[in-house]
Amino acid sequence: MQTRMELVLDAHLPATAIMPTRLHEGMRYAALGGGKRVRALLSYAAGEFCGAPLEHIDVPAASVEMIHAFSLVHDDLPCMDDDDLRRGKPTTHKVYGDAMALLVGDALQSLAFQIISQDKLLNNATQKLQMLHILALASGSRGMAGGQAIDIESIGIPLTREELEQMHIHKTGALIRAAALLGAYSADAPDEEKVKAIDHFAKAIGLAFQVVDDILDAEADTQTLGKTAGKDARNNKSTYVTILGLSAAKQLASELHANAMAALSFYGREADCLRQLANFITQRSF
Image (cartoon, rainbow, N blue to C red; front, side):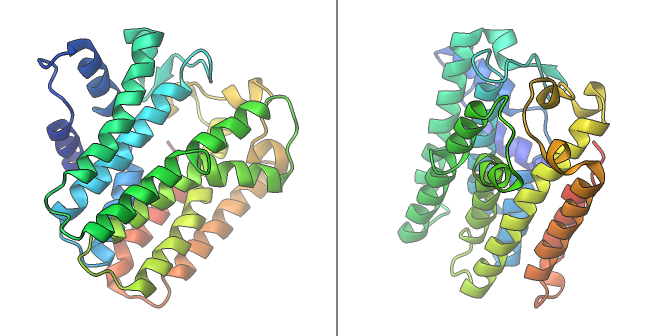
């Protein structure tokens, strides 16, 4: 599915020969050729669970990946996390400059909504509007951008576990939840009980994703991660490891995994792709 997502993104990103060429080069640099594509995989797994054909999930999954890529480009800027490495290669602003990187992120965000709005395979206008609403909510002040704002304001301020959880529900969890729901609504008539199960599953696994990220940041090196390791701790940011300790953070990841699995307990093999993805998210070592 990672290969499929790469091809879908390649088809929907502007060609480098189209003006403005350097902006389009930057968009392709940021979005292609790297990453685990966890959010896209979640869209595909949720869509398959609800009976959507793969080709109906392609655009919604790509839109989430574009929003994710935009957020990484902006997060890495000197005015934000100021990082030089992402997915094992120089960050976008290191290659294209700060101003162009800002525009790359802006353009990727706009394109994510454009490709959903013009997708001819999504015939149900109500569902298409719902997808746009879900993606907008997950991207804005009540989602990813809001979580990043809380993160910036919390540098050097010790957070409680509850405050940290609220930050990551917005910063990380919102887009993961959106990825799953967009996959579900790619089906012509998704079963509402399945949608509820997916929503519960995605909330738990979205938080687990961040907990595992914090664990890996404490245990893995920069080469393994493909980004600068240990940076949050050096910048005096609260993480699940700094608040709970390594052992308790690992226990929390296990509990969240169990919670995600429980959401699928009434379903059989049709939910296996979701289960496999939950296992990957919580058991990954890179």
